Each structure stands twice: as structure tokens, then as C-alpha cells.
Image (cartoon, rainbow, N blue to C red):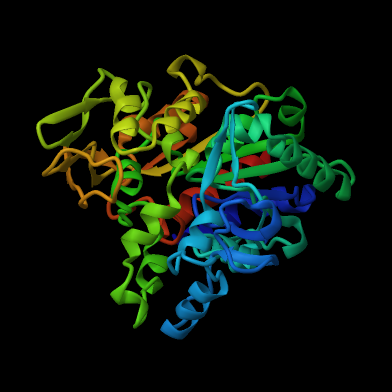
Length: 422
């Protein structure tokens, strides 16, 4: 029986008795658009040549090479600067010591935006939700909660973005006569969802929470992005395949160079580095020349690659003892568990602090979803009953969980269980 037929059976009685509770989706790393306003007069570094207002700085239009070239020149660098320096300035974060948070650079204001139809990752989920043989949902009841995916949870909390997201959820609930909502997180979106669900008012509003590919205990792959601009495992394959640098720009910069510079002080990546909860026993997670780094030495690793302030983002990692069921919120965990997944990165030479490092070699393979190891994913299991955990075998990985049949079937079952509850 197909997953859609199975879902139809599960929902046959529930759909007649219940209205459709609003679905709120928290997307993953890099999925939300980032729209920037830049005030040249406020920026003493003169990184950009012109002011710009409500300009998309991510995701760029990347249908062909010409559009990539247009994107690079949209963010024209100031006098004496190199071509991508303006874009780096608006993308990168800085550490605000007084406020103890990561923020955009001076003169830069960023707002996130995303609809499910714009998402590189979420479109298959949209098809499931709207299909008449699936959930048959009204499109007006499916909302995507865009957020600034550059930030760690501590910065989102202290900077007010988490409160804004809570307010948005409350507004959506009121729009539908104070209905409770179904919260769906994908990848990094689950770290935001968990932070939101620490609030008792949020717990009362959420009818059920579906965690898809949750990197609760971190991933070794993010260190490659921070040190070397590694794309594999850090960017969705569809986007990676299209993100090509056209002539003549490819003579000046590479994709990895763009990623490396954009990731400077990228607190969200540091937050998703291997944590003690997800990598128990303090294993070695990186080897650079003669030096090795354990989980407990991540602060030193960040310092050695020239980004010591990223150690502050580790405060956003969640301790294993905090993974307990969320009061009143049925939780469902869905992830791939049979793909070779690295737990260690190896570099030929010691880290350089002032330039991009060589791309690492992945090592220490264990079961997982190709990005996040099982020990990290399975922290989700502590939030729920074993019957609500869908550990998927076969070819399901971090990115295909949303479009492979087995992944969609598990998501359909989770929705069915939530909608059956009174």
C-alpha cells in the first residue's frame, strides 16, 4: 500500500471530525531568503560602493551563469576592495561583546523571508500536504516561519528574534480562531523549534511537533565549512549543483572561497558543531597536520582557524540532560539512520588562521543520515515514545528524507497520528 493510501486510511475519520490545524514549518540552514538593507554612511569600512534597500543577498538567482555574475556585481565593492568584499560584509556576522550576541555588521540590516514554494528543500513536503490523496490541506493553512539562519540560539534569544517567532505563531493561531498548530522542523529548524518549545505558552499552542533530520547533537561536517568553505553536507545538493561561478569571475574566486568567507563568525554553524551530547566520550573530531582536536577542544579549533569568537556559540548547544519530553506536546522523530556518516575531518597540514584551509578528508564513518551521525540524531528519541520514532533505513539521507517515498510515508504517519488526537 502506498504512503498516500495509508495516509488516506489514517485520516478518513479524523478529517471529517476535525478542522485542519495550521501547519508551521521551520526550514533548515541556508533555506530562508535573507534580504538586506545597507547604509553606506554607517559603515566605516566602506565595504560597499552604494546603498541598497531590500535587496536579496541569499538565495541568489542562480538559473544560469549570467545571473550569478549579475548577483556578484549587484553588491559592488567599495574603492580598493575586491569583487566579493561587499557581499562578504553583508553576509558575515560580528560579535557584539556588550550584548553578548552575534549580529550583522555595522550598517547592515537583514530580514528573512520564505514561502514553501520558494524553498529548495520543502517543495516535496508541500506536495504531500496539498495532495487530495494526502493531507488535502488548504494552502492558506501552511506557513513557513523564516528566520535568520546565520544566528545561534543565544543570539536569537537575546536579540529578540525568538520572541518575534513566538509572536508570529500566536498571530497565526489567532487568524484561525485560536486553533493549536502543528510545528514541523527540518534540520537546523529543529534547534529553533526546541528553543521555542521551552516556553510554556508555546507548549499550550502546539498540537504536535514533527522533527525531521534533527541535528540535535551536531555534525562534523560543519567544521569543513568554517575552515575551508566545504560545500558537501552543508548545502543542499540541488543548490550546490547550480551554484557555479561563471567566467571571468571563476578566475578570481571559487565556490569554496565564497562559502569560507561568508561563514566567518557564522554562529549557527558553530552551534551545530559536534557536542558532548551528540558525540559522547569526547572523541577526536578533527586532525590537522600533527594536531588533533577532541570535542572538548572545539574552542581551540575555532581559535586556530582564526575565529576564536565562535566558541561563544557553543553555549547554544543543548546538554544531554535537557532532552526530556516536551510537556503536552506529542513529538515525532524522522531521520535516516543507515548512511555512512563522518565523525572526523582530516587535514594534511596544520590550520592557518589567516586564510582558507585545504578541503578536509572525511573519516570515522558511522551510521547516520550522511550529515548527522545516529548518536546526534537519536537525541530526538528522548523527547518521545519509541512508537513515534521513525529511523529510516536504505538510501534516506539528510536531504532526501523529504522526497524519498519512505521519508514521506513516515511524515504522513506522524501527521495522521497528530490529527487523530482530540
